[in-house]
Length: 343
Image (cartoon, rainbow, N blue to C red):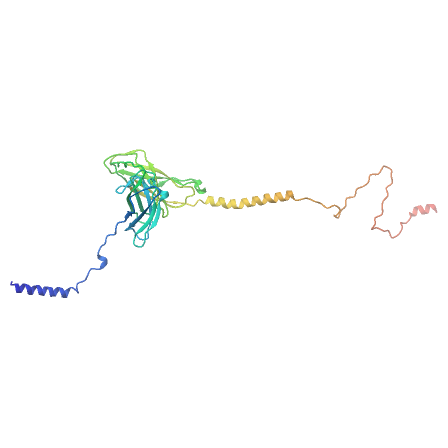
């Protein structure tokens, strides 16, 4: 084909493209998949001493989400906080809420965590889907220690988690509710796990779980399973919906809901106390008033008078005094028999 023929063909194809381009459907804007940005955390400085302040900023978080910022020890970004929240300065933590774009910026004090460094600023969501970011930080003057070496074993829950036991009648009167968390774990690793340390978390409502370390005595060989029983106890007077979680290392193995009834015995006690105490005080007060009130009886004001008779010697004639209100109409008649005798 000559050069003129090629040019003519190209011109025809270009004309067809210009004609068909407005007719061809364009893909909708929402059909293009956009990956959600990963949460990020930046610090105003990476090293400071106790008593100072740093500014923690973040982007890529869910909008309008409550976050908790903690200074934690014995942690690195790739392994997380090994000791859980027990390795963090919880009393010096700060809460912050992301804006409509998923960003935040807030100051927090520099505190010494209960565990040695390496340290991080641990930022985690309080509600909704779990998301955490650990930013490396150095607390000046805080001791440093190597991280515990991970074991070759890998534990996983093989059966449903359950809460066994009964707290007793004393829970009705505000005693701490207690249960036994039972679950079956299997060792999926290549090395045995000896005396594993689990973390049992207790969460109430929208608050983050409070973790407590509990060690299970025993050895789980590779490919074997074991029934683990861990005690769980709430604080006195606790009631409502709780979430019990068990974690090994940085992985949450299982979660179990727990509904605790209200201790109505405490309410009944206070109601009875509010009724009985005022009634007892009233009765005591009335008894005191009755004892202190003077008892005076007026003399000579009653209908009946007490007449005291005078003592007279024997043989003395008794003279009857005429009553002042009695007056005889006539003298008494003489005895007829006596009159006839004189006549």
